[in-house]
Length: 201
Image (cartoon, rainbow, N blue to C red):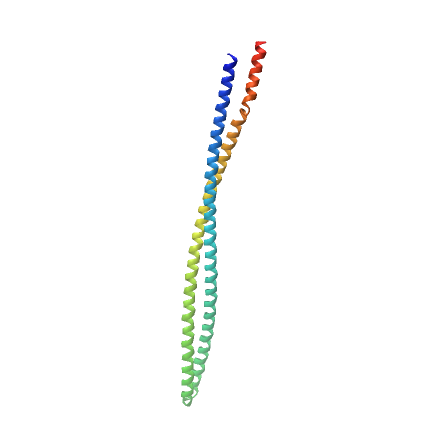
């Protein structure tokens, strides 16, 4: 084989190696860009899920406040019920004591009836607050579930992006390895020419 043929084949092999390495570098760069896109998409879903978590937490706090308010009205209504029961017992005692106390007992009966109506109103108001608090609890639970779904979706995109990052890293290493074999084609050509001179001598 002549010297020119060896030089041409060496340069051709080096050129092919450089083209192969460049192809792997471009492919790895594409996977890096694709992985970066998935990372950005996953980050967006994480931020969206965090917003829903904060919104759900706010509804949970609001619902807890209504539950506490309703509990206070329930306690207040229970106190009025006990007070009304006491007046009913006092009125019954006056009815049994004497007919002359009918008017006084009637007054206590009216007072007891008023307290019963007031207690019933507080019971209804407390029940309304309990229902309102339950609605906010359900709404908060829905936002918690929605936020959890976005968290899971964001986690999936993070895992997918990580896979693309690993794949891109593999192609980068493969491209680097392919390029390093023929990183200096001029040095290979000089070695080949030196070998031909030794054989010719």
